[in-house]
Image (tube, rainbow, N blue to C red; front, side):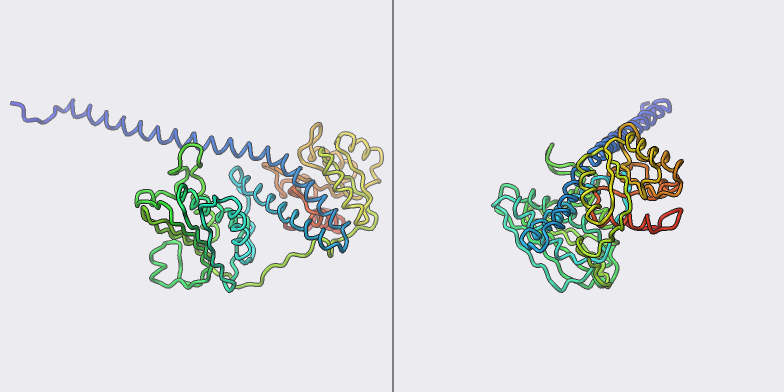
Length: 421
């Protein structure tokens, strides 16, 4: 009589089939993750190559702009225009470093800042790019305190959130609201968010009246590569990057959304009670030379020309080469003719490292500084282990260039004093 109970052999086959199906699902999942990982690795490699060329272009823009500021004297109108060029150059420099963070672990450079200027800058940018159907409103409280933050990353966070909000309001009359204020997080609120602790925070709120999200979508928005956008409309990286940045800043995110009712993002940055760091005008208090001789080698002619112009204005004698082999030949003919050497890391024919090591065979005491826009596995510790003095990251401002040379010349024989660039 058939009891409906499968035979042992049949049961074993069913179990085996289910196990194989589970293994196949896991394998497919791993393959998808591997393809995504390989895609991001390829993007990182591409970003590194682009960064080298782009930093050379950006370096020339910044250097010649600073030269123009030095020549502009007291012409305030010209100074103001050039100051805006430098401001844009600094932002571009930061964005390049942010792109490189996908391919290598760049250290986050946080300092004590006010978020008000960053928010205003992003709103000005978004105002010129958003469609006319979207109204932008803001409430930026001047009494919101300071936080310990990387300004480029905060800029990226806000741009991502505003861009997502605009996408959610696409095809309708919408309103984007951005608010910045200071708030006190109590025990009850802290219990609703594992990343929050009781205390004072600077709160950044971005809200829209778009289509909103259901609970299932809301639970996945911070997953890498998860997106509700169509092909070609987004990578799904935006909110995962936002989440990672907030974790780096010991902050927290709260999100509220319902279909048809819009979305509200609240970002909490711990209040940091410390004095603001001030920037010194790049034209003031820059260390000048006293006729020291500099050998500057870079395969980018514009960077050689810019460096020569800046260093001559600050009383250095400069010889530049775009061909490292020619530079080495000159040095070997007249090894006592130079006091410091600066060389690009990546050059055809002879790398900066190879050039530096050849020079040190003849003059072990001469400071050799490497310059790079994309150093890959090279860092200051590795450079110094070879007897070279330091590694400077492109694009280089006149203040960084002058300070690096000044410290190299003033330091005793051996390693230069550690410094932040």
